[in-house]
Image (cartoon, rainbow, N blue to C red; front, side, top):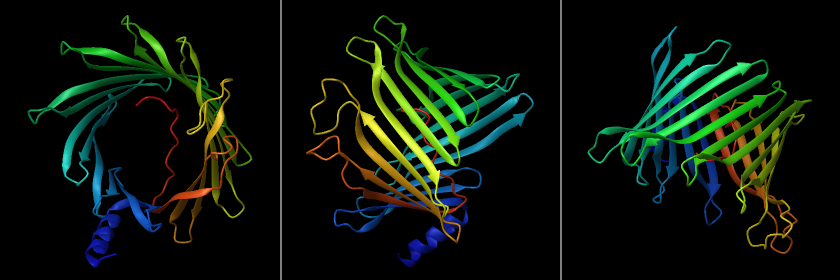
Length: 320
């Protein structure tokens, strides 16, 4: 590492609450920096990738500030700066988030997203409203997303609903996305059902994704099963099997049975200096036998220094 780059890294890390670097291998098998993420104590986040000339350039920078926070609610401004492959600013997105508490632990959150227009100004692009209500061990969330239509006025383009039921150690979440159909109504286009259970330092998760089939009815499209456990030496191991009806390079089974598409193995350990090292390895079916997984291949290694937290697994594998 060159001295100037090293000093720049030290200055960045000193101002950061955490800094994580992901290493991958190039075509020659050499270990190279693939991604660097800095997170400040305020929650600001800068993500950098290695450009084609070998330099780490910014890809996205997210900053947040609290505009107001009182008995009437909380207003937060989020600025998302995106960069092109050379590291030059490409676009800026501003999101205003207003949260109001509801009786019983629920809330109403209004998000308004402004994006750059052709004139260099910012125009309102997305409105998102989420209402969450809590009743005992059941949490229900309803979301409405609006965008400008052909006339320029805002129209509802998508609705989402989510129901989480059960205690923290044994929960099930069902989330659905409703999109407009050809008649202008709303039809369920994606459904995700996730269950999480924890016992004896082991957490098991399963997620099933349903999408419309040829007859228009929802049917199982993909599935994942994950087991997370702590080893005696403190290392955390997460093994995830991803299932699908077809595997690349193989003819789909006429029975529609699910096959293992990939197996991910994450090992996370904490070193004596407090840094966290996370390795990702992948197994895939062999070409000769789609029902048998090949050898485990290491894909990446991420080293985090500072206040490190594992990346939260997405609650669903649905549309953005």
